[in-house]
Length: 213
Image 1 (cartoon, one colour):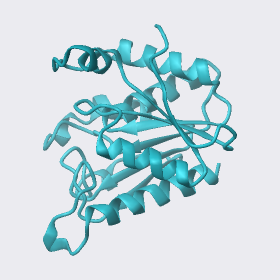
Image 2 (cartoon, helix red, strand yellow):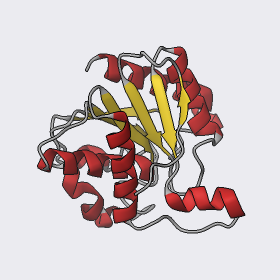
Image 3 (cartoon, one colour):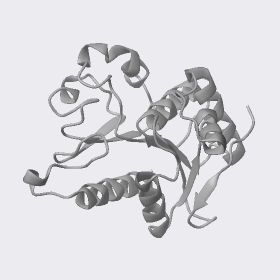
Image 4 (cartoon, rainbow, N blue to C red):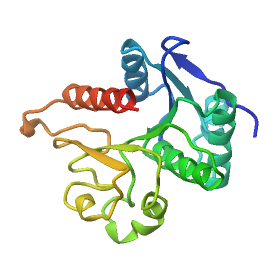
């Protein structure tokens, strides 16, 4: 798998490098991804972004296409990790990007290696409104040893506060809840909260998680 183009924010000599992959539908320079990368860079972290092959191809021809199959997504992650080196590396991303990162981290454990941590920005535990289908997206998390932070909106239709606390997640997996947030952490107006507030809380929690490594 060739190395994808990397988009880098922040200092070259930060104590940790945070790599964030995009979700299924939006590119690495979406407002969400751009905000998180820039804010993490302001906090002193080196933040790296990349795109999976299907999204990189969309950038060239403008045609929407479904995500690549899991082996291709995993191979892309592996190429990025091998290029950057696993030492002091935190991997993760938005939705699908974070899920595949956690799968990659678990695979590395089986191979005798490990990254320093995983961060998932809205984990897709199951298809919207179908918690009975969570098993396939959950199995690798149940015994993951790599410290993992999941930032999740309380009313995320891919896994909200009404269901996720009932799951038998290991102590290595920490879930931080963002009040009234949807899959992108956006709250309803009636909640009295704003999207920037939830994004700020998520970024601060991510920063604290990285510094705790």
